[in-house]
Amino acid sequence: MLEVSDLRVVYANGTEALKSISVKAGRGEIIAVIGRSGAGKSTLLRCVNGLQKPTNGRVVLDGDEITAMSKRQLRDARRHIGFVWQEFNLVERLPAMTNVLTGRLGYDKSIRSAFFLFSKEDKEIALRSLDRVNLMHRARFRSDRLSGGEKQRVSIARAISQAPKIILADEPVASLDPELSVQVMSDLARVAREDGVLTVINIHQVELAKEFADRLIGIAQGVVVYDGTPAGLTDDVLDRIYRFDKDAVTMHEKHLNIEPSAKPAPVPRTIIT
Ligand code: ADP
Image: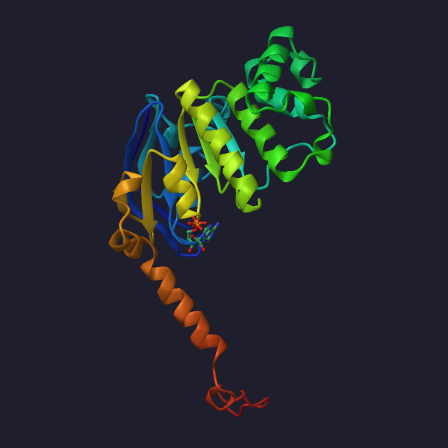
């Protein structure tokens, strides 16, 4: 379903976010991508949905090369990609139901959809999707009246209502407390599993990744350093994934503990050249 080959991303400022990433994933897999902040997880996800053009390499989704698509082709391709973002990306003043219905917009190219006049079938799909995350009773609630966990479950309902080929979730529980995080991850994994949808989740909580994913991909400094089962995530492997993080923490601490006397001398205001 997804084939990422030799992906390299160098940003305009020279940062090499991904060095050479190759990953194959099949229908129904639930994959957690773990790694320290700055490892390249979001960049990888943005390449899969076509928001980021790689410097080298290819992304092929269900036989279609995302990395070779025009903007228009990408818009069509994204119809089959469900997104779950850290900040939910709901239209706050619209009811939960309408937010879920926006997941159906790509399927209706008629002028009706531009005015949010959805078909009976779309409404049924949206309601069923809300029901699957146990939020049928919130269908008419404005989204800004929902709790954080409910908002994220609405965005999961929106993603599944698209009948996507893949769901991409970028730090879906980073804004939620631990209890709600478990519920949201459990809902996401359950509906993805029921529908057999390949799901790729960027997540920094290793315990949640181990509990809900079938496969973990560990990234450090733009390179895959682990690709395997949750059971294989030994201390050594964790060290490989997060080692650079410890270095970063140590450097940060050193920086904070700088003795006043060790600070560089202030630059003189007038420099005679
Ligand atoms: P993660 O999601 O694992 O935190 P990212 O993919 O966001 O990592 O970032 C990987 C690296 O690329 C980091 O060093 C980050 O600072 C850098 N980066 C991300 N986006 C940009 C950008 N638009 N321009 C320049 N550098 C970027």
